[in-house]
Image 1: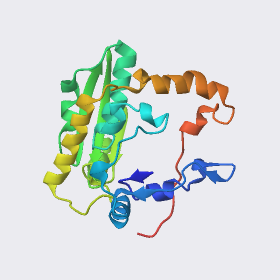
Image 2: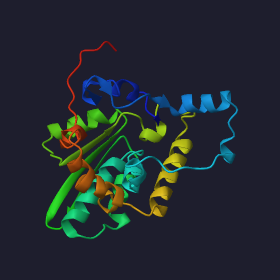
Image 3: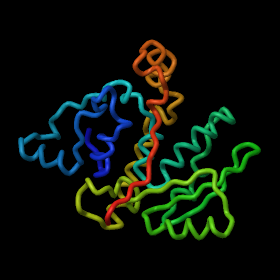
Length: 223
């Protein structure tokens, strides 16, 4: 797999990503490493025929793409929550505040008779602001933390261009993809519906849905 995130090299080797001693992920390349291989082998990507991803990844929704931007992961979660509660899609203006900039931002979104309070940390400098907000007594239903400012579009595995305009341009492209994708919610994907309703039940090795969850432990590291 190719990723903008350097941390996925470590994550792919975590115990939770192993089945009977075999990793679920064969190999992890950063986007920068993939680009070097393309240049090394003289591949002209402008003349390569596109292919859909293998199932079930081919059935991903544009909500998954939003996770590449700061605030996008929280937006994807709330989109699905809104749809599951009210059986209709939320207006895009509903999430406008979550798409703003700043190392720490908050939003209170009304879903039916429930108010959902969200905090977004954009880069680790926002953690102090989150800590201060919690210390003042505020509570949140959902907290999103992106280590890389701007989100995965500014990941360590991408090009070294770190200008604000470049980050904004990449985020804009993500939102444009979201506007044009046919499937914008995972619950509307025929591939994912088939995965949950049929394939999981028929395959004993993956029937336990715990494989979709993981847990993290505090690690004492030297920085």
